[in-house]
Image (cartoon, rainbow, N blue to C red; front, side):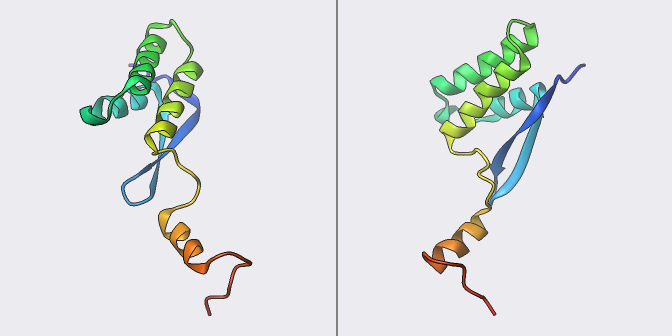
Amino acid sequence: MDDMRLQSPVAIAVGAGFRRDITTLAEMQNFLREWPHARRGKIYETALRACEMARAGHVTKDQARRAFAAFTEAAGIAWTGIDPVTALRLAKAGPGPPRSTL
């Protein structure tokens, strides 16, 4: 089966600040199907529907990717580029220039 690889992955934060790249339409669909029922809503439904429509050829993979990325933003799981440990260290350091930890 063609997994319909995305032109650019969608990075999400999973677990304790680990990054996961979603690289195919199938990975997007599987991730959405495993999403907890209690946390599903309209934006979830839109993302899932976009994936199904892309698989059927009614929308592009990029349109489905954008819908999925919007879902990850709304769900608070979009990768921000900074892991939680680093964010905590920066918060503890307070405002101003970085301080030496030596």
